[in-house]
Image 1 (cartoon, rainbow, N blue to C red):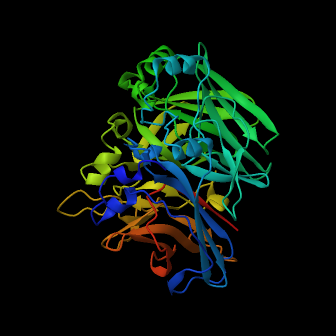
Image 2: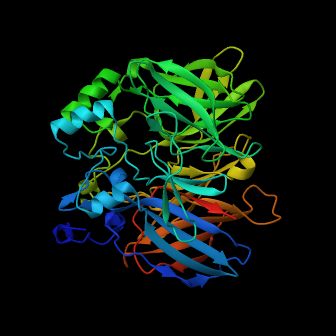
Image 3: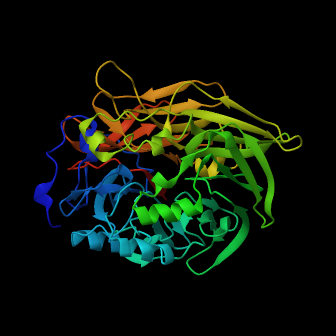
Length: 481
């Protein structure tokens, strides 16, 4: 890529290497391991996240907008192989030529007025899918919040182009799997004279069916949603955008998220859709909050129980300094910390109550998805901040929280910065925490990373597999057996 010599100086030791560009792509048959990697692990962990933060001579503004890279950890007979590769999207090809053609979450591509005008009539979506991945039918797809999921080969990590077209302009990167029908359930937001939330199911790249739609005057920014056995639940926080303001923002060159406004007086709207295709079933009102990630939802004793990782307000996205790349690299950014919050919605009276499940903060939450999603559960895993005196710290511990007792267990190693923990069940083990957690960890002192394997019951280390370079802080991944 042109202009690489113009990059920022190498980040100082500590977590800052997690925001440094990784250019090298490798394929290794075997990583050096410590401890004992369980021999029953016979699948593949795929991870997604940003890995290049410069285009030509320009630094990308926001962590969320780095160029996507896929990472593959494959397990067999106690051994771990590894490969990483940039997602060869159109956005990546343009960036290789030194151009930043896309407007990201909070990065201005510096387009001409003419290009801004044409965008009003032909929106240019980025296919820089750097957030999540999933299996769709027999294909694997990488996703972001624009409606251009990219299909890729899980072995070679080669990209095959756009897999399908979601029915809207702003998409969730967190679809749910309907195991009975073997399809993904997701939603989009359509902007225009009539804005809509659109819920749909996708079976493969060719088969898509609508599940319901709802017209809305000012759409909310929503990153994920919840599912129960009968319902799909959208939680519309009071972080909203007026479609006329969005159009004016495009002309003015404002970032995507910069067009949204926090309207405290609107509160939070809990929108419950019938998964059978019956459209909106009920709407409930709750106190104003903001969240990126839902944990789980289920129906019990006439209540809809909804757990999410909640912030008091939307400062984490509206204050662009909170996750601005330059401040993260300098170590001066201090993002707010969320808490695990439970909504209880009475389906008979419409009353909504909320309660914190713990005073322990965590993000990037994961559960035993295959067994517990849409059902009552006990354990949630995530990343948290182990606070100490001195300069601000980034996410530096793994947390296991018992939502019934409030008890928390932690894994923390000074100078190490773990990513999202993914639960993998041990064959034949019926305990909810009977398995291991997989997390990619940055070792700050060496500026290299390793794959950590923890016993999910005790949060004690089982083993680790060392990667010969740092893995930039990413977002999400999945284990495929």
